[in-house]
Length: 478
Image 1 (cartoon, rainbow, N blue to C red):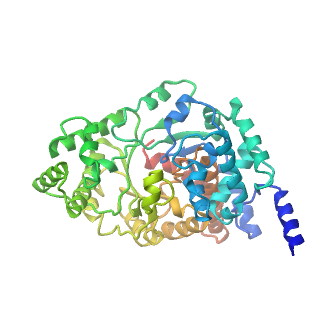
Image 2 (image 1 turned 180 degrees about the horizontal axis):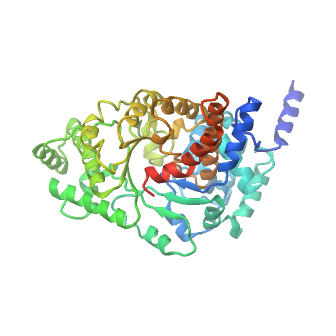
């Protein structure tokens, strides 16, 4: 038995790493042939990424990536959370830190490779395989035995001009890339990128006002001062938000992004809004008042979108920073945000009653509650001209859930009410892998409709091209 285990470990250490050309396509040969043709037609189309979290300074400074760990592990909480669940301390992976010393970075990489089995069956494994093979030419499956050799291989490439951030941006074929930005940001990095003739990709800011709307959070009275203007009273606060939105529009923004615990949008009367705002400044606001004010401000954000044209994206239903000790030590966005059940139909009725048919208003709805897509988002998108069904993201960004989304939402709302794919990532090198996965899955779904004689192949081709390129441009007004 010991010999068998040793031989198995040796065989795994020498296993070849490949990405099959038909990965994720349907297994039935006839349907797979159709899917191949459809996928081939869109495989090399430019990437449109209207929602993500890449730091624009990464592209502006174009500094070589420090090492494989700081590029492929530290910023990717999809990876670190799986390793943490398997017993790897986040501190050993450098979570919440900048680039580590070489010995610690190499040690973290060894941990990834020795725990490679933890990624089996997850979309993270699909993305990582694609990154390693397509970007770095890795030919061996990661393991404890080859961890140092793979680290050296990738580190050597990162030191070359062809693997600097801008070179990879061009290689990935990214036509449009949205970042996520604080309303108080001066957007200097975006201005510099837009003026740089070496950067052909449009890199646009996104207005993310959550921390200024959550008036019950610790530190809010100090934070709101960062908006500028006269925020000592409610009317001045609203005016400051409107002014910052106009600033973002003038600097290339196309959308405003909102993520709260619920999707409530019940507006308050002016007197109640002013009263709660004063309580928030005084530090005496109750949790119930804070929630009512935030729901009121979500309604106000929709009103502002009707005025300034920013697309409104809404993704409620996440319990942020679920593990207090991890949050205190490592900060936010470190892998322990957990989905909540969410309700949209009643919650959005005040907003949609007022703005759902307003010309030019676009509201893109996302969820990490899979039942909501078929029960609420698809029916809403199937009636209101303003509403679009956002692609499965975060915990739903996997082949099984994407398949359920494709069937449930298109049966009710059709393809024209979809947002197109959203990669929603901080992990720069995973962007092309994520979009490739979406294109393959969409090709497979459409091939099934062709094989079932529900669509002709030319219609499937047009639909897939639209999902990849035309639809996100239309929905996000690019």
